[in-house]
Amino acid sequence: MTQILLVGTATLDIVFQFSGYPSEDAEVRANGLRMCRGGNASNTAVVLSQLGHRCSFVGVLADVPETAVILDDFARFGINASVCPRVPGRPPTSSIQLTPHSRTIVHYRDLPELTAEQFATVDLSSFGWVHFEGRNVPELLKMLALVKAIRPDLPISIEIEKPREGIDEVFRYASLLIASKGFAASRGFDAPESFLQWLRSASDGAEVVVAWGEFGAFGIDGKGMLSSSCAYPPKEIIDTLGAGDTFNAGVLSAMINNMGFSSAIEQGCRLAGKKCGFFGFHLAQ
Ligand code: ADP
Ligand code: FRU
Image (cartoon, rainbow, N blue to C red):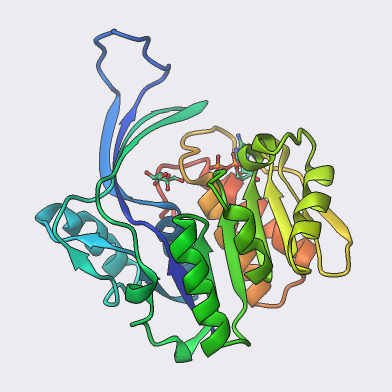
């Protein structure tokens, strides 16, 4: 079975649930509160493991008791996090105001990001796929070069969520790029097709995908064929936090299982839509 390595951040999410977003300077009572593990690659790992994949996560973890929230959830879903460096500090933390229509994230981090030197301690020999969050570009470039040097055969996917300085330089290392609508907008694109053409031409023949919220997702495969899928909204939208991370898991799982590019985009949308109908990432509900 293909083992997947996911590289990124694991966060402590404090999620306040509201029926409507509170106004500035209001004093309101939330309908619910969750303190849970979060972070893009970490969320994607938890979903992938429930789809039957063996996953390892690598990212810096804070050496404090609060990190148990993250580690316990990884353990619950069988994610191997033993390769994560532990350093003094506190976990990257998000305060999230969640309504059925929005998820407002206030994020704080002072924990150092994963370095290429730390990444180099991971034994890559058993993995069949590696997925990176597109962040900390100077170190990410070194990690990507390392993967190419040690395991040139290993497929690399990279999530391009935010417009970070120098991020375009990582495109050429990827076999699959999964971008966000926000990233497309940051480059002046307001339509998925033209954005995908640009992204593909900026890469080295990568397959490219972009999620487009309630409009579903779009992609261009290795042969230049455009695919798309509508969104699959649940009966009631409950929690869109991490819909994109769930979409990524659906796409990766289908690609790894050789289901074909267009089915991968559809599976991403079906899974992300399902996820919007319940809180968190536990699929069996
Ligand atoms: P993010 O969580 O990164 O903001 P997006 O909003 O782009 O991600 O959504 C990712 C995927 O989740 C979309 O491609 C879509 O399939 C699904 N999705 C997001 N919002 C909805 C929604 N309101 N209804 C149905 N599906 C949704
Ligand atoms: C959702 C998420 C949260 C985390 C935040 C980090 O996509 O990964 O779990 O707090 O984004 O940006």
